[in-house]
Length: 434
Image (tube, rainbow, N blue to C red; front, side):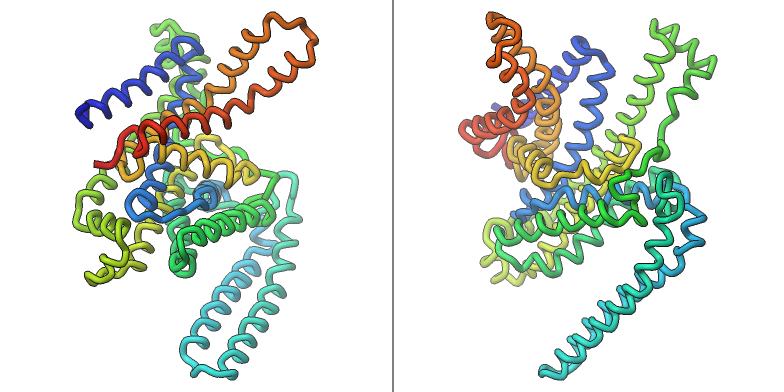
């Protein structure tokens, strides 16, 4: 079959599934799936850049997604003036001290002659800087977190439009990727996977425990929206009249209107990133990345700086995941660090890339939509199917109750089955790399 026709048919199938959901379960449910499908497609696109273009095995995806979510808080939430007065300046001084300590230690290690003196001076800088850092940091943290801990207890943000948080999330994730890549990209692929997973766990653990930064597990709620609030729309006479013309109540139409607003914004971001990824793939830089992926030794022999190119693609892919994380937090309207589960959701994004077709940007997008649709719909469909199968069993049967209670596990089972079937019949994915 012609690859273009095949791709059109695959995307038409996914669109049909979402449309069928709208007809059977309501358009509100269909738009929920569509919006998170758009975010998932962007995450899959970022991972595909790293794996499909360069062969980098990054399983710390959720760490970069979480940094994107943190950016949404730091950019859009109003500053907590009482917390800033209590310890904001001291916290800033502590962070600057920590950064200067790292810079001074690196400078000493690089400039001093090798020997025991270099090690001793570097160690003294690190220990002295750490003690000074903790002397400033601990009282500042306690002062900030003591300010109305039930409602705030953190520094807040810059009170800027939430849309600015999306590129800021990409920049924050890119900065973290640069730091990680400078140390971890020299590792073999399996060690790189372990390192990125561990770093993602560290990032999420910091977000859970540093209340002064993001309220930790208390969560930050009430993030500003880039779209109107439903209650404001319902109080607008013109909007109420418009809802009546469509045969809907104001409540129904306001809910759909808001979700359609998110759909438009997310679609614009996905299309922009997809176009840029396709241009990169077709450029000399993209051909060089694929040559490095296929044979690093040969590419290095041709004078290519493999480590530098790996760092570039690692930063780009992580930045896209950071943008997706900021978008997801914007959609949720809250930051919940406890919901970032690296193993569970990183596995899901990787399934999207593998099923869709690694190395093919359109395949990654297709996988994002398809796998997210299955992830959402398998549980209710599984519950219905098991209920039908166990109908002959009497109510109160231990076997019947056990099978119905196990229906949520159908998600993981289905993901495994889908992955196995695709790898068996389409080893390069539904839309393989050309």
